[in-house]
Image (cartoon, rainbow, N blue to C red; front, top):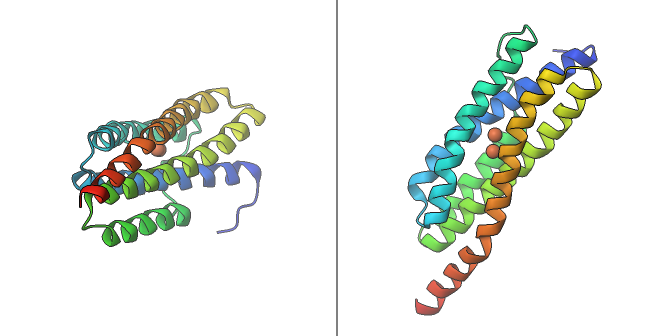
Length: 168
Ligand SMILES: [Fe+2]
Ligand SMILES: [Fe+2]
């Protein structure tokens, strides 16, 4: 369907993010049982809860705008998720590589989300919708914190993978 004006474009972005969150929630739930490193398990568990909250926050945003919460298929999210699934199958025999693969996929997801929410927040601010901007800011902060945690935990995961390789 053609997008005819700025408000429709903004709404489309929200529907896209709403769909992406559902896709990422399912992907994280599927990755969790495959993780072995405590840091990865903890991170996923925390962010699954946050992602559920984010879906609720987006519903609040739709409500604020007087719109119904609808999903528009997010092809970007689908691509990142399917790439992650494929990689996980390929490293399945090596737990240390599984943890690294999960961490890498989650990092890509977070940065995709950060880019989306930053643009949506700028849109909400510029179109004078401070309440919407504030709700989206709550989500953005969770994504940024998660991305930071993933990056901070990565060196230890590489060390673990090297240790396993040396003792194998
Ligand atoms: Fe999210
Ligand atoms: Fe996220």
